[in-house]
Image (cartoon, rainbow, N blue to C red; front, side, top):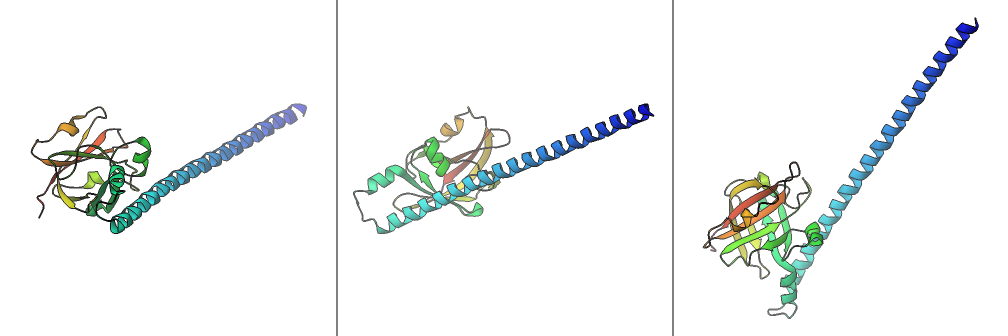
Length: 210
């Protein structure tokens, strides 16, 4: 009789331990899920803030261009901060472009890191983060040959570029900077492939001004 009771107690103890273990696993799973949801919410909230900041920058830039007088003393300062605006209608892209690249500026909007002005021969290189489907250059790889890209300088002149090549390189490959003919006017867009850490390169050639 005592042996039977002892066996039942052991069985009940094992059942209780299993239940407690399952409860712990369930609670831990819920905790991990909440952490992931919170992290995702924070990430997308930060992206939204960057997008809002960039759009505010566009609005302020447009207001400045509207009300500034020719040869305004502050115009040179503005030119030093912003290179212009890039627009790609096919993927609904419209952003200000900073005239130089820093880690902080790159978080806010695309940045020019090589080249001179659109009216000069050469290669203008612009980098932009790939925030997947949310921001900046996430969709440039979906463009096709002959798709148009518009670049506006600080004086409102519109330059039209036609896409002719899209490919990937390793992060250490700097050839896209020098990959052009000296008498051409080239626009190079650079972003990251978030799946393999390579760089997505888009090449476009400037059309003649009408």
